[in-house]
Length: 270
Image (cartoon, rainbow, N blue to C red):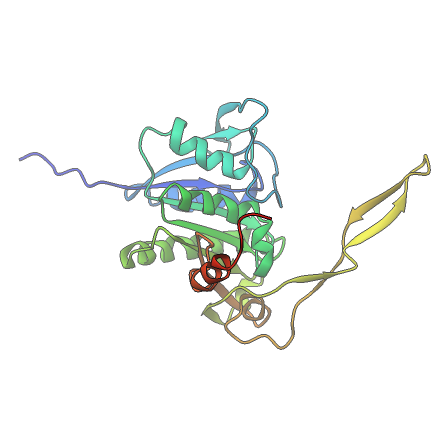
């Protein structure tokens, strides 16, 4: 009797820290150790592209090179001289022979909490997965991290995403995960909402050697100390893993009827 071939879950792995970053290598290795169940495709930027948001490349060609990691030559992927969103779009539409079942973006070095997700290349890569109709996850460590914390994050994701897929991730919602770096003291897991992150004195004014004024983006992070327990910034501050469902598209359906009423009173001619 012929053996029945079991279809492996095809996972596209990407990030914004670059294809050689520790986080993506540790995550890929963790998934590779379960390669009897998963098919892996790694497509990521050729260098760091943090805080680039959902930018895509339109005015120059995208170059793609196949690479392998020294610690595991069997882990192969493609590096792209573009943005995280470029990588996901290019992978699905041009590089891969079949559409992946899941996009995982990360593991990012540094948090992606609250309104910072709007700037995040890590989260934007996952959003691109949603746009392409694929369930997507973004995962970040809340600090610089070390080998132990990256390994913990990788193993956590490997245990979590099968549960999410089994439950049925909606293709309009990505899961944004932030894991404290002090993994020995993590208290638990919270399902959270996005918080509101603000920065005080965001720009530092300086003078260059020619006397020209320039500005350096810096600033002090200010989180609301009175946030509810189910807000992502509060959860991480309290020592919990934060897991936030982020919805796309962004249309506020509740406002549409009121907006239509307003526009009915608006004359077309001036």
